[in-house]
Amino acid sequence: MLGTILEMRGYGVVVAHDGAEALVKATDARFDAALLDIGLPIMDGYELAGKLLELPTMQGATLVALTGCGQASDRAHALAAGFAHHLVKPVVMRAVEGI
Image (cartoon, rainbow, N blue to C red; front, side):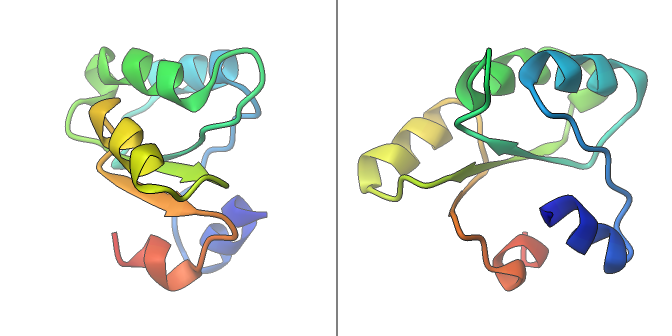
């Protein structure tokens, strides 16, 4: 749903439904940002972030953690994993567009 809303607002969007799919798509194109759900199946968002940051196509990309967990320790964990931003669901579009 977030991808659809971003597309409607004029952003180029690529959607992946799990970490493995995201890694494949991230090797095929360069991205300015990646919004990653922390609770992804198979590989969580923290592990995916680490793998994405190793890809040449993701150099300079902004990683954004999307999660239902909003405690200070959750934010610290996301930032330590390489995320530039930590957004708690439900995500407010102003917060996404303000990144």
